[in-house]
Length: 154
Image (cartoon, rainbow, N blue to C red; front, side, top):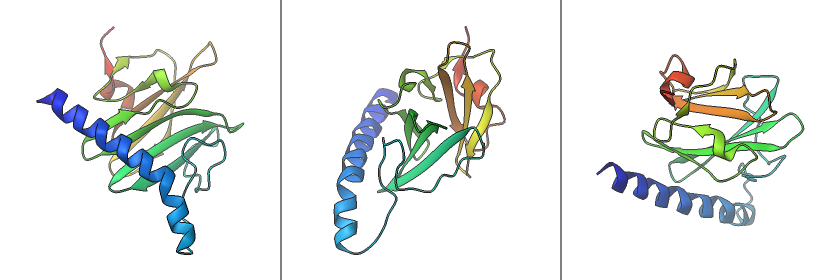
């Protein structure tokens, strides 16, 4: 049951991603200026980062929320989709393989991190690593510690 729900969410997220790419042309034709540019260094979206060390951009389409984290130079580090109670790490950014979610946990890090984004349903912590990479921990908004909520035991 869990795998079927994950596959269904993955399909919805992929469809939403495709729509997010196609939607700007439709919106421009209607004279609107929605957030666009998921996956770009400097998307046409408001930077909603809670940290002066990172840029965070949020896109929403058909009930699916996409969150993208960039470093200060504009390099896309990671992104994920959120719908209902599920998260899905997206295959974009130099740290795409280091995104931890409750559905796709990673081992906990010993490096300190900081909250870069938070809303009522989602909290995101980025933990820079000594090798220059970063781990991104996405969790439910009411989680006290995103690393704990998105990690598995070592």
